Image (cartoon, rainbow, N blue to C red):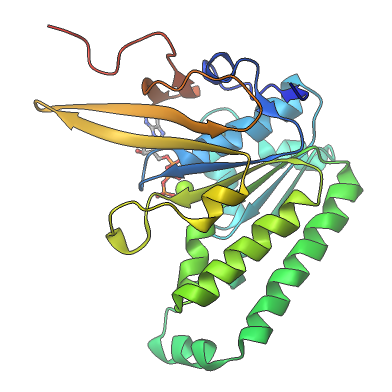
Length: 252
Ligand SMILES: Nc1ncnc2c1ncn2[C@@H]1O[C@H](COP(=O)(O)OP(=O)(O)OP(=O)(O)O)[C@@H](O)[C@H]1O
Ligand SMILES: [Mg+2]
């Protein structure tokens, strides 16, 4: 088995028999509000504070101020980590910004595909430079789903996300890429993205008999023996915690 990287997320390493495969890409898949951003940030924070691995958060979704403020609620002071040279935030929302004005959106959508791809190339170059700058070993890209807004055409979008994942795999950092469970609210289907990555983790909210439970499953982890069961997890002031030996719904 290849070298593993401890995630530092309570219960997750146990589920993964140690952690993520080093230098590989893990797709974290889930619906809105399932905790994808928190889990991904936790992986970076634990890397920085427990395992001496610097990290970079690439955001296609939210601004740095918003991210810092949200994560501080868990006691994760990314602003401080940045000052210490252990963390960098890349604001890539320009790649995905949902056109606030329809007019602007139309203009963007009629701009060339080449133009949009150039922006992705630039993002990768920026990321590569920053990885070298702080010697980052962990990277998060949150969230691939946001590219949807930029690339309305499904084929263009797929090409863009596939290009992005391929470029990320060349950078050598252990990387979490988050994405929505499905685009456009369609039933889940296997996406090209899932074939390209080394691991897939699915986060979901289940409803049964009036009860709601958060459940997580490692759907795939190449080259590692993992616990493939659907297991419960919680989100509280410490972040995400996974319970590998507990049933999702307790028996009556
Ligand atoms: N301190 C807390 N205690 C309990 N639950 C919390 C706490 N902080 C946040 N949450 C829960 O975490 C979830 C949001 O997590 P997060 O932003 O990581 O989700 P996400 O999957 O990234 O969502 P989105 O698709 O909207 O980006 C919400 O369901 C919220 O209720
Ligand atoms: Mg999120």
